[in-house]
Image (cartoon, rainbow, N blue to C red; front, side, top):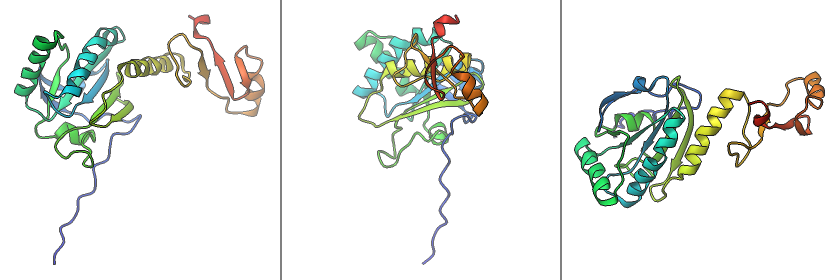
Length: 221
């Protein structure tokens, strides 16, 4: 019996590397990844239109959209439904729920974008995209990825917190501790030499030890 040659699995996007380019039909016309150059982008997928959990998420994304815009962040949704289904669903949300969806939604019927970004998890579904979140920076690099199962709606507070943490890290060259919120102390990168470690304790930071120092950004701003 002959065996067919199996194709190697497509690699998922990696943190710190360029996001896979795309050109796709959306509810706002044809869009390309390069259209978002200079802005942060949250690219997220949902399993299907006209489903209850997805509907709650779209309303929640619409609620945080103004805050994202203040932070130079754009939103772009995706599922493998048609553009006509997307338009009908978005209109339905506005009519039945009273919420206008201000961001575009990719109609990925051929699964090209979903495949490039690893949005389909065969263990959950071969015909629906999982609830994926990709945060892409103004240089087109993937900075964060979050995957949720089909049954679980995303937490918008965490997505907004993550954007704020990434932007704070870029601006101040610091780290953010667990449960960090804007206004909290940040982590100073640990020293790379013994001499720097000895100097660190005298630099005026709040230090528990040479490798664990924090500072308050409000002092500098």
